[in-house]
Amino acid sequence: MTLKRRVTVLGATGSVGTCTLKLVADTRRTAAAEIEVEALTAHTNAEALAALAIEHQASFAAVADPGAGGRLAAALKGTGIAHGAGPEAVIEAAERDADWVMAAIVGAAGIKPLLAAAHRGADIAFANKECLVCAGEAVLAAVAEGGGRLLPVDSEHNAIFQVFDFARPETVRRIVLTASGGPFRERPRDTFDQVTAAEAVSHPNWSMGAKISVDSATMMNKGLERIEAAYLFPVPKERIEILVHPQSVIHSMVDYIDGSMLAQLGTPDMTIPIASALAWPERIPTGATPLDLAAVGRMTFEPPDEQRFPALRQARESLEAGGLMTAVLNAANEVAVAAFLKGQVRFTDIAALTDHCLQTVQPEGDPFTLEGVLEADRAARAAVKARALSL
Ligand SMILES: NC(=O)C1=CN([C@@H]2O[C@H](COP(=O)(O)OP(=O)(O)OC[C@H]3O[C@@H](n4cnc5c(N)ncnc54)[C@H](OP(=O)(O)O)[C@@H]3O)[C@@H](O)[C@H]2O)C=CC1
Ligand SMILES: CC(=O)[C@@H](O)[C@H](O)COP(=O)(O)O
Ligand SMILES: [Mn+2]
Figure 1 (cartoon, rainbow, N blue to C red):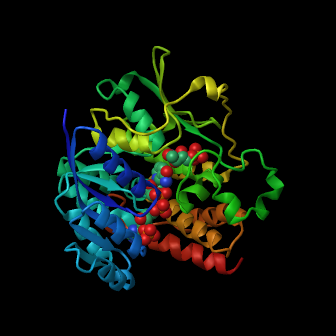
Figure 2: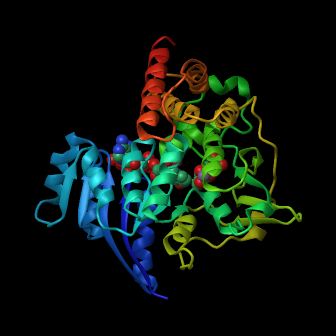
């Protein structure tokens, strides 16, 4: 089998983006594969983007920040690589002719490029969970219209995707999303207000970008993943459960009506779910360390604690409420996490700010349209910013 792909990576300079490009390069070197790189994007990191574009011989590179365009142009001078700057240039990257697009921008900023790629029928390797959380209906509609595949990359959802019987969804009793519990699983609750940004981004098992690392620390990540799973898999939302598994070896499970539980296991390395999405339904070799269960020794499990991690309750209630409440939750969380990372609010303020927003913002737009989502997103961001100023 020769794997043929023309790939675009949205969010190429990030943790998932660089992992994807390393896998692409390794696969080209070590397997029967014809993989070309069409376009790469970043936000402000123009020099790193240019280096990646040159290394991977991309046709086009774009930075979302218009102010970074000059640096990108300078770094690409003489290479022949076309480039652009501003949100429209990132959308142009998504519109260019790649058949496999890695959606690895962080946050709702990724919505428009994702929709552009989905609308024209590209296969979407889907990491950017915030897009499904805030615009799930629009994303699924764009994928259906375009006719491409939505290939989950988030490790839990990729695990479920690998073991879910899509031909017989009625045989699924429940989905069990595993959660590491984050860096503060055992930390005394009464010290949470002293948590520093450096402590919050130190995930016990995964090396990831700052925003998702903080989300893992508050366990909002698992809440967002429950919402993501509700869009990705044909299972009633009340049958999506969370189980704390501190070793992050079992990446999630599907529980069937006959009592069989199927799981996907692996070392905690994003190379594995990205490779699954790149080759699907085939498999390709990767450099990921093979799982050594004897070395792991023990795997443990605990129920999640919504008192200790209120983000879990907030996400569950937002999913139950439906409509645009998950868009409100996502936007509120994005602003609160950014404020925490800048040292403007305490760790415990993140949940307080999202709670405030969920109680005060009542979006009235249409959750099926991008306009409705963006309106809810704006209202939630404004509410959190106003509240954060008064803390
Ligand atoms: N990291 C992981 O292991 C996993 C991540 N995910 C999800 O994947 C997504 C990416 O995560 P991760 O790679 O960790 O994030 P990073 O912060 O490491 O990277 C984010 C990428 O998005 C770009 N970016 C940031 N803001 C914007 C913007 N406003 N417009 C356009 N591009 C932007 C960044 O560019 P620049 O470098 O210029 O800032 C960078 O390329 C997230 O949604 C996350 O939840 C899911 C599972 C695992
Ligand atoms: C790698 C990945 O998919 C992350 O979402 C990871 O699962 C975070 O770990 P926890 O949210 O379980 O701490
Ligand atoms: Mn995950």
